[in-house]
Image (cartoon, rainbow, N blue to C red; front, top):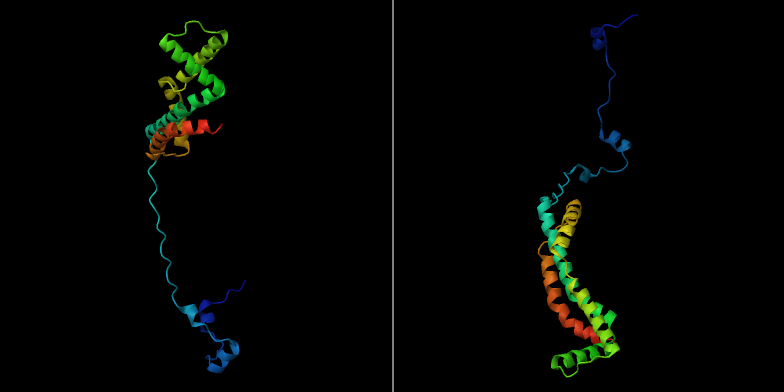
Length: 185
């Protein structure tokens, strides 16, 4: 195998090229050059990136869960007794109950009819249901742990807004319940 000497190759004459003239350049390019292509493009403004929120701890999520549970409990404590009453009693029965209570208070009527006794039994069932509406401390604790874990999984942060919502509902709902009761008439 015959390998050429590198020095001989480099000493060899090279092909002569013509220097570019205006004619040659116009022939090569029929369209004029776009000088805007050579301008520096303005750098885009960097997007404002908000720093990521710090991840809340499980105890923070448990606090949010407790706030949520207390809000739900407040709403159900206000609304469920009214719904129980609407479900259990007709309007005429409520009026009869008022009359029975007044008679018992004044001790004017000592004997009650079978219908009145059934109505009073129904009323005691209503009172029992009403007593069981609010969550007990054990129920709150039972709900708080799993709900706190769900809030942690989905990174839910309720904040004080949920307390405001609960407070507004607690103040407003009792005012609207009588109005809603009269809508049936």
